[in-house]
Each structure stands twice: as C-alpha cells, then as structure tokens.
Length: 163
Image (cartoon, rainbow, N blue to C red; front, side, top):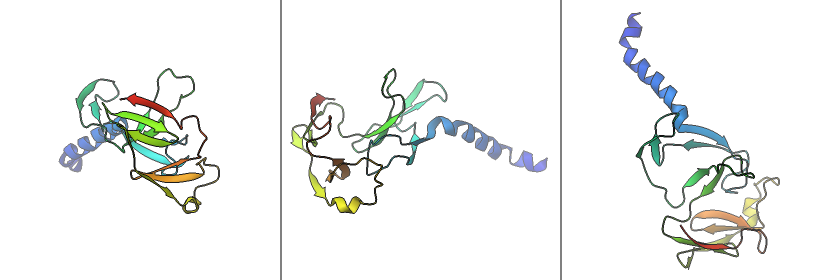
C-alpha cells in the first residue's frame, strides 16, 4: 500500500496518457497505391491526429491549432459520404492555400512553374513486389518519388486549380 501512495501521481499520469493516446495516435494499414514506391500496400503508418489541431478527445471539438500543413507532408484523407472511397487513404501535400496546381502529362506545375524532376533507373525499384502497381517510369520530383506510365492514367492531366 505504501508503494501505491508513493507512486500514485506517476500512475495517474500514465493512466491518463494511455486513455488519451488512442485519441491522437492511430495506426493504419495502406490499402491503396497512394504514394508508391515510397510506401507500399499493406505498410503500416502511425498517424498523429493532433498534428494540425488539438481536439477534445473522442469529440469533434477543436481546442486550438497546433500547426499548419507543409509541402511534402503525408496526410490521411477520409471523404465523408463518398460511394467509391469508404476507407481512408493517404496523399502527399504538394500545394498550399492560394497556390495554383496543375498536372500536364504527369508533370506537376505549381504557380506556373514545373517542379524539377529527373528520371530514375526503374531497375533500382525491382524490390517493389509485382502485385504493387507502379508505373513504368519512376522520377524524383522535388525530393519525392513519383511513378507513372507515360500516356496512361486518368489523372495524368488535371487543373489548373487554385487552392
């Protein structure tokens, strides 16, 4: 009983932390080809749900802002009331509020300027399992890997869109 009294404060903090942790940190399994080959189908990611705003645990009440999205962040998206996209998916942020984003033949154009990119040797990505649908070309675009097959894909042209 003496041990419990001496450590009551620490045990209380640990109990509170364990109760709150699932409200802010959650693990997800990737189910779509959102960012291959950086991450692959079946990979597990831990999402910090307090990265941009702190909400009251288990409620949708925003307490305060903790940060702002930055270019390159890997974010979880969940579209409500969308027939095709029932499970959450991940995307990388390339454009910020006020910027104009366009894609022409898989080349990202940000505010009228093409993002720098260079072709990478596709043989260097032989480690990607065959059941993971990456394109025939892999490029490094502004520090991030992208993959596509030239002339194919419904999203190879899009925009311009002002965010």
